[in-house]
Length: 341
Image 1 (cartoon, rainbow, N blue to C red):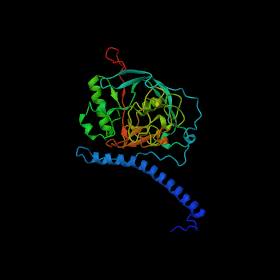
Image 2: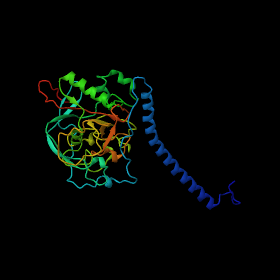
Image 3: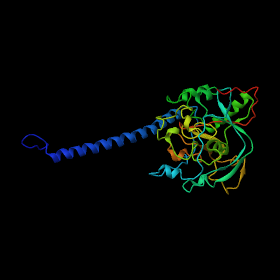
Image 4: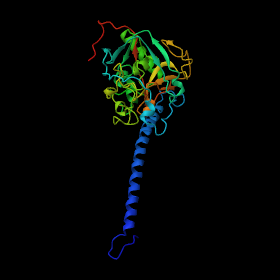
């Protein structure tokens, strides 16, 4: 019972205490709802994994967790973007898109180059070091977006029944392991008479950050509005359409190089870059236990969406946050190319 004065009103100190309690409860409720929103993201991915695992056709996944450390607490954008380099120029999405192939995939030509691969930032993980010079001596054509469901299902129509309900035709294909991604490249090569592959780490990183050593595809400042990450800059709880974040294009006009889904690379994983000596057309170790994946996903924060971030997974692993894109290393004749729209 709340004590009152003779006039029936609440004592002022009781009213003040009640208001304080209500304010505290409101803050606690807001924090609980915020945490619940984050939890639902993880639960969504786990639920889809259980659906996938329940299918008899899927082999058991192997390998440990992605070797991506969580972002340090209270990390500000300054902690990630301390590297002082020249201001970067804005890029246009698919600015140099050269052609569109038979499955509707736009590709952009990237010229031979020598660039610095890896990170020299003291706060970067050891597997991104040492920064070293890499020379790519052959031009290649990088897919402007990750492979979509609509593109992949021309190769494997049965994959549609494995899709989560939120993973639309124009979203990146997920639940494809490294072996399935490589099989898609072989199928596409045979279909078109050109050489499609998964990108090497070096090809992927240069396409993501260009020659000026930028930290993110768009520059040196983390901006959650430019990709689909756990910070929800675009309002997506899981994957998003591959052309959703046009303002997150790399210097080459390539989209979704960070966020949305991690992407398989061709290389076997190695825990660092050895001596840091200059390398020409590196392809990684001859064998290994894990394959490399790059770029971060809708489940990751900005720290894991840096262009130098490296992760690993077993080749037979698949999940709701892992997809791929392709490169074509064949010269394209104007007689067979289809102009990009």
